[in-house]
Amino acid sequence: MHAMWASVAVSWGENASYVDTKGSSVAQAMLDAAHLRQGEHVLELACGPGGVGIAAAEIVGPDGAVVLSDFAQEMTAIAAGRARGRGLANVTTRELDLERIGYPDGSFDAVLCRDGLMLVADPATAMREARRVLRPAGRAVFAVWGPRERNPWLGVLFDAVTAQLGVTVPPPGIPGPFSLDAPGALEALMAPAGFTDYAVGEVPAPMHANTFDEWWSVIPSLAGPLAHLLASIPAEVAEAIRTDAEAALADFGTPDGYQLPGVSIVGVGRR
Ligand SMILES: C[S@@+](CC[C@H](N)C(=O)[O-])C[C@H]1O[C@@H](n2cnc3c(N)ncnc32)[C@H](O)[C@@H]1O
Image 1 (cartoon, rainbow, N blue to C red):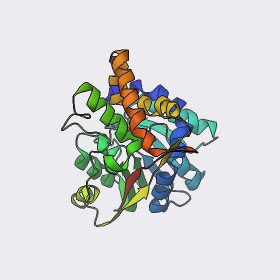
Image 2: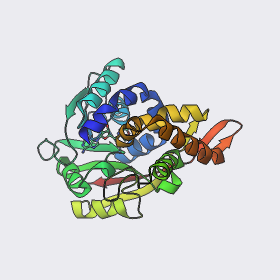
Image 3: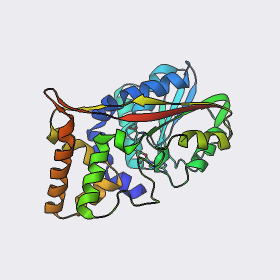
Image 4: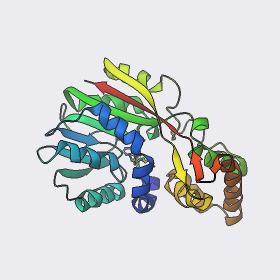
């Protein structure tokens, strides 16, 4: 998984502004839930290009500090470059796995993780780790994707790949974007991790694409293990997937481009 995410880091870097725009409603909901204050110390997990952590760094200010972390050094390098580009001197980066957060207990006032928790083999361990590194009254905020059928911006790609290759994508039992989409899934991780004070809610996360080609040029290239798969199949099969996806997305075409629904689940727990 590490190597597969590393291999799509270039696309995440090239499309970082796009990811920021698309993820803006979720980022805002996460920052609101985290109640960050100036001077606080924040850890972003599975940061990718670091959009959420960079926004947090602007809130905690020069007396605060933010660590942007990901298990792929290729991702943290992009996040570091973006933080530097914004002149943020309070940001550092670190390579770490969500399931083994290499910091002592009580290191942070807040932990933020957008679209990472559902990708790990053992999200219960990751949730316990997030709570462990929080100071008393610290907040952990996780965002995961809601149900596949309510996220056609990505679901149609999975459906088209499944139809053309005749295999379920992602394979059963393998973590993927929709692994924690069931009602109560986040709560079921937060309570056993020791969060007694937690809240979970939905956040609309729609996507706009001016054209089908715009969608096709961005989403498959960001899709981690799926991007890897698409790059390795015969061109005619990839073309058939593209054709199926275009037909499925037609339902969402408007005179103003494609308006694709999406929904995230955001959970906040206080230590
Ligand atoms: C869907 S991207 C989300 C990136 C970013 N959080 C955002 O919302 O823009 C998932 C990220 O999780 C990272 N990742 C996946 N599994 C991980 C793990 N076990 N530990 C740390 N990072 C992980 C990947 O390298 C990738 O950068």
